[in-house]
Image (tube, rainbow, N blue to C red; front, side, top):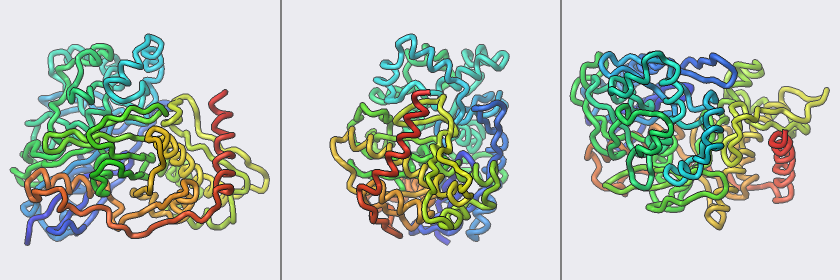
Length: 494
């Protein structure tokens, strides 16, 4: 048969895989959950060896489902949870510590120290980011400070640092390649998004040796070839890599300035393509790199909310209110409204536009009459309300409202929440046929990077499956926003 494309999506809670056919149709998909480790309150880790083991298993199973073999794979695309940090030995390929996940708050004190030393403006100017434990640079420093011998080994280049894309790329190529690309590099606090390179001044402030850092290659292009694997033959090009949110932007077909999407995954992330302009934010958003293709950097504005689908997972695993994530919609529909309950999804602190890692999640307005249905409904509304804050901040930075918003990710299949999102924003919310847009975008990028397609205009975009149009009045929607902001403001003033 014709060659296929393998798209890997190594996410926060699971590793997923798509096999795309010659017309970019989804031939098969597979997924395996990843163990979450919480060694202390506010700390989140993954086992890098488990990440790699699951990757191999998911690839095998998904190829089998598609009825193809590794010999049929023309190219591999990778997308990944972005800021999660891994440090490993270059020779043995063994990690020196568990991966520190993007949600982890352990470096909050160091970030505050950098702010107190007057460093935030420098980091903001060069990286487009704020000083928050969300990003990789302070996590690398923590590993170097807390693993015996790591700092010396980092200085000599014996240890490699990378986000998850770099770790997977190194393993797929048998250790031959230590590289990343600009969308992931731009999430490290170490990369100057204007110069397009890691910055020695920032690295020195964070205490991260430049010898540990990966090469930065274009997002679409051949990074290396598979070597020494027992689940894929040698010689398959890894030809496209992007951070998960940028890959989703690409997969939604938002290739032009002014086009935006929101991905509802573990967290919720709104990205707006700003073309060749790195637009600074004055409302708590991030300026980041979308991708580098054909020698040109494309930028984006981003609003990041740390908790979205993770709140539903909490209802399932932590509280036992539901057995499976999709059950939340029927539970929420069992009541006519939220019964006065308001949920602020700050289970890992508040991200944009507030950037308060110290704030914790809150359920307010609970009474003796509160039911599981009210809590489920309030959780869905809380996710949509935090996205509302991101979109309003984005409109403020742009000087005008968004026209519509593309959505994707697992939680976008929740019709109740998507309708509420449209009602809050007062604009159309468009859901595509392929909601695994993150992996889909990585596959499209690999196709272009491998030369299977020679024109970006020939790549399929996010074909609409359903459009949610607002039905609530602006006054009704405003009441939800005001109730939510009353609770948020209370938390911010504690």
